[in-house]
Length: 89
Ligand code: SF4
Image (tube, helix red, strand yellow):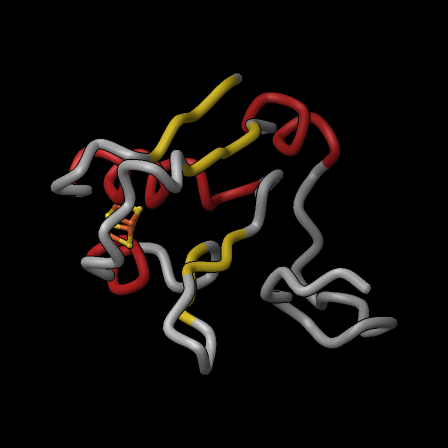
């Protein structure tokens, strides 16, 4: 089962669909180096659609966000005190 946070409920279509070319231009993959991450939580405040702390206090994140999330993810990566967030285009 996929435990990553979802932006919309399964099966629900967004009323504001992101154009396919924009998705392609902003597609990225995210990884968090868990050996560096100290669960500061800054990323969860800056990009809550992508990063979240679960009930156990562990960080969960969307590995392949698309659309308008890229700028927030960049801001979260810049703000991470441990420099644990990696982004690949
Ligand atoms: S801001 Fe960095 S150190 Fe803090 S929870 Fe996010 S990835 Fe981990």
